[in-house]
Image (tube, rainbow, N blue to C red; front, side, top):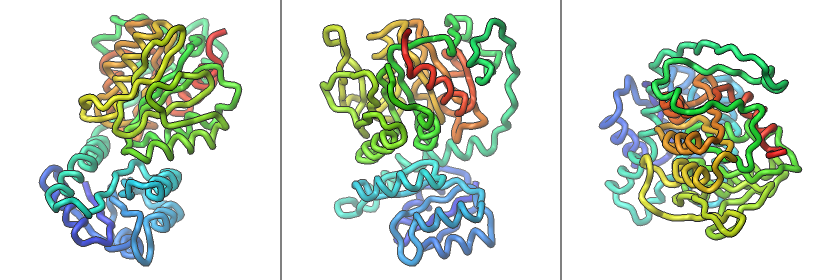
Length: 371
């Protein structure tokens, strides 16, 4: 892997270099103090991944991303942004310009070098490792399974269900195009914000199901993500609050650093936020939401697992399938990182795999809920 570190702080550049060199096999590491220098380096040498600070002199992160996009430079970008409203807003704009993930930047005010270095290791290294693994793996195309008596929507949706999953026979398959859930849940991580925008682009009111999302992001950033999805869909979209009822037609996003679960309350459901132990090294965790919704609404759950690193969501999908719900996963080809959907695929706990556009078409059907 060839990495370019772009940050105006020589101390922070050193922290990233130290963290990466001690954990990942890299062919080369370049550095730049601002976007202008970074673009010059990209003209001279090719890199696989760039870490990009959003606040820099001469040419900041946003200006750099715009130039990278306009020049068509093929590089994956992970942005560092301050964990405040301004930083979160910048991160959302960075995603629109092609950034694949965001890491909250240590402010340095109360952190030692060692603490800041550990922060970088915890947040950045898993992303770089997953991106590196995808770049070196072969990506064979899956065989297409034939199907008869298809729903009309099925003609537009890929029905690729690769064979060879040891546990596939353990779960009753559901035809996702004819399934009518009463609640929809979504899990995503690296590459997720852009994937979610595509997933929700075709959704408009009236939506007859509640939609709950777990996206691996730091605090503050998740509120901006919820606002962004609200602007795209025109639906009420909020960062979830503890104890609030789950209402049809609303989008709920798990707040950063809080697991989002569900509890039964009379005939309805309420949000249950907690800061329990991390699952799959993350909080919020997809597994927490998926396991709760499977328990609370058996046979009524439609779930998506989108691009993301790690295995979060795999156990939750097993729970949903054991409760006779429906699971659709994003395919390898359209995922930035195929860790999460790949883990579900390996477990056989899914009904259909398709492109992100396929997932979006299924969500349009599912958003109309039970008939």
